[in-house]
Amino acid sequence: MKTYDLVIIGSGTAAMVAAMRTRAAGWQVAVIDFRPFGGTCALRGCDPKKMLIRGAVTVDEAHRMREKGVEGALHINWPGLMAFKRTFTDPVPEKQERRYAEKEIDTYHGQARFTGRNTLVVNDTHIEGRHILIAAGAQPIRLGIPGEGYLADNEDFLRLEQLPRRIVLVGGGYIAAEFSHIAARAGAEVTILQRGARILKQFDPELVGWLMEKFLEIGVDVRTGTTVDAIEKTGTGFLVHTSAENGARTFEADLVVHASGRAPALEALDLDAAGIAHEKGQLKLNEYLQSVSNEAIYAAGDAAQMGPPLTPVSSHDAKVVVANLLEGNRHKPDYRGVPSVAFTIPPIAAVGLSEDQARRQGLKFRMQSQKASDWFTARQAAEKIYGFKVLVDDATDRVLGGHLVGPHADEVINLFALAIRHNLTAEDLKTTMFAYPTGASDIGYML
Ligand SMILES: Cc1cc2nc3c(=O)[nH]c(=O)nc-3n(C[C@H](O)[C@H](O)[C@H](O)COP(=O)(O)OP(=O)(O)OC[C@H]3O[C@@H](n4cnc5c(N)ncnc54)[C@H](O)[C@@H]3O)c2cc1C
Ligand SMILES: NC(=O)c1ccc[n+]([C@@H]2O[C@H](COP(=O)([O-])OP(=O)(O)OC[C@H]3O[C@@H](n4cnc5c(N)ncnc54)[C@H](O)[C@@H]3O)[C@@H](O)[C@H]2O)c1
Image (cartoon, rainbow, N blue to C red; front, side):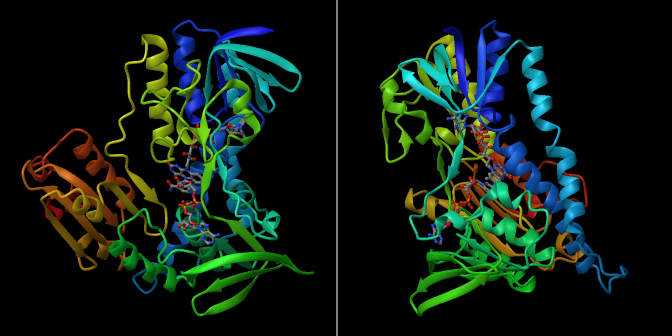
């Protein structure tokens, strides 16, 4: 049996960071994945999605500038946009494997399954790790409804060669918001079926309310308070059966997409064989991202779900785990000021505390919030949706939370993240000179 200092399950963001850093310290390292190497973000998530959004943004921009000096209708050629996406995604697995090979990190292809406290089997090969890092990511949650198997997932959507005419998204979070904007701008009829009272519940409700105008404008049919009970296959497509307060309803679709949340991908691992404690589909970890019941085991990223399931968090977790492996358990993850963006058109963004969280914590703060459609940033982009909510602590003048919707929200949110993570005050931000006219040059007026 081959023995390593560190065996990593998964080949995504967390895995790459952990593998490179431990190898640089002279450790013998192995990385395992049953899918092509690269992980969710690069192959099935953030990056391919952003390539498709670029096409949708271009069409949206041309649409907004109509009768403002820009003429002619643009449209998306779906196979062409997909080919553009593949120029990024196709080379990823080979590039990653080459990087691992160059560093003499061993790679294994197959499902990893524990056979003992620090041993695994991949296909028929048994390997041992002085330490093992679970960086197995997340997978769509099971809905437990009839016809669930007909659901397409994010991977299926992001590699569609033809765009179906009628698309139903089950759930109303990040994936539904982003995929609906892509598909609607590419010409599909899109319906979002969300069980909760509103969509994008990770973002400020008022700002989401302003953004809803855009869903309406591009023809996305958003049904809140609607639970999907079953999916039925017909000769030509699918029937999506739902229930809501005002009764049952059926939606016809050519494609039904899972957008109902993701949970750690732990089922295939046989955690019990290694004595790794878990509860309700979550690993039980201590503050050092180590298993509470097996000290050889650590976890990071979406598999750990100690912080929000986002790429920068996976990378941060991996750095924390490596520091603990190399220096002993001294480092804890720090999730203050993790920014998050839903890449709708325009985007919506958040960092730090929401208004509700700040109130529940009993903090004394001042808040500025405004729909700012008449500000220059909105007008030069011919975009009506622009607004913000910023929370500043009364006692310290520190920024507690930043919430933005509209042009440049996805970039400007990073300045609020910088302020929160490094304890900058509102005065610090106000007295910074930002280039004009940019999204950032509005910050002084938001505080
Ligand atoms: C559609 C979509 C869009 C997203 N967009 C964004 C975004 O814009 N910004 C952002 O910050 N985050 C985004 N995310 C979230 C982000 O992709 C994840 O948080 C991040 O990729 C998680 O990285 P990870 O290293 O923890 O796991 P992953 O990158 O998921 O890697 C885990 C790997 O482990 C493998 N694996 C699982 N089980 C086993 C096993 N038993 N044996 C061997 N291998 C196994 C899997 O095949 C997978 O490749 C998005 C997610 C999705 C689904
Ligand atoms: N831009 C980004 O950062 C980005 C983009 C996409 C995905 N992601 C990550 O991927 C994860 C998964 O995304 P997601 O959009 O699937 O999940 P999500 O958690 O953002 O949203 C899921 C939504 O589906 C609803 N829902 C659950 N079951 C339902 C049902 N049976 N019927 C109707 N609605 C139902 C929930 O109430 C929830 O609002 C996110 O948590 C996020 O961390 C991030």
